[in-house]
Image (cartoon, rainbow, N blue to C red):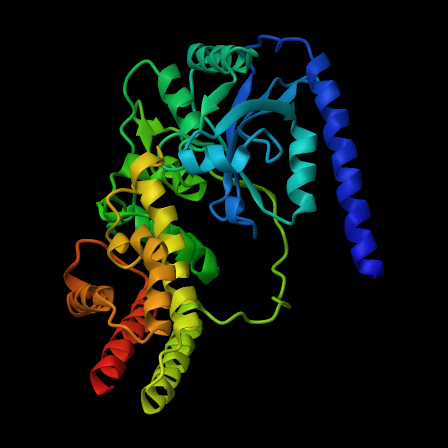
Length: 396
């Protein structure tokens, strides 16, 4: 209880600091122009929340011998804004550019025990001036809000675009890695320790997420952007100076309980469905309540995936071949399936579902979309329900 109270108190203090620094930031005068101005890219390590799993990027502007040390942050959003969940599902989430003192920025990441690295930009004074002018123009109230896009327009791509826009000629990004990534595989790289988050993201991503990425595409992930800039030259010199570690958080041992992965959970569920189906077959009695519930659940998931594929502006969510397994028709027909089974009548839909799922499972590896392996036991559960009911009806 004491530890919980301590955490609550620390979060309350963080909130107080946040609003205090916001007031200070709003009172700041425009940046004092100086030939000694320093501009650097700040990269923050991933956190434990799903929206922090990929890290964060911001731009620091410092004018030596003055009190001006500000961080421009394109990652500001508000969970409490009107219809946030609905707008997020549609891909209409608005983020904005914020500006806070460097000390506050560091305090926040120290509070959450996340490392921060700095890369000072190797720019001419003219390029620095153009960059800060662009940031200040972006920070104007009428300009600071932008339509967020997870893969192509986020807190990492925006700073890179501002840097590229300030240069006097195009920037050729370079990478020291020969490994080929797709959007899905690079997301897996940063979610490997969070299997349920990875499964949920995989569920929503369609086949376009399996396309090979360019070097520029990889920069939507802050850590990747940091490494790419570290190997990129401009005007025959590195675009950034060597990486400095501003905040190093100690490695902490995981104390949370190990959560079974989706593959383990759904494989166990398939085994339980198999035992239930055997018992059901021996009794020659359909468990219509179980089937109604099962088909309804698959149908609800299908409604979400269909909505994303048809209406969402999120990239790479369509086409999604998982709609073969999860689709709204399951939900529509679930009550009717349960009614017919209760009356011990033949359910034609079971023939259709059994055929479709058999093809899906047999040709699983040939479908042009990479699926989480946990999908197979889930498909097996629904396949078993249709097969068992057809066998029972034949046996009667």
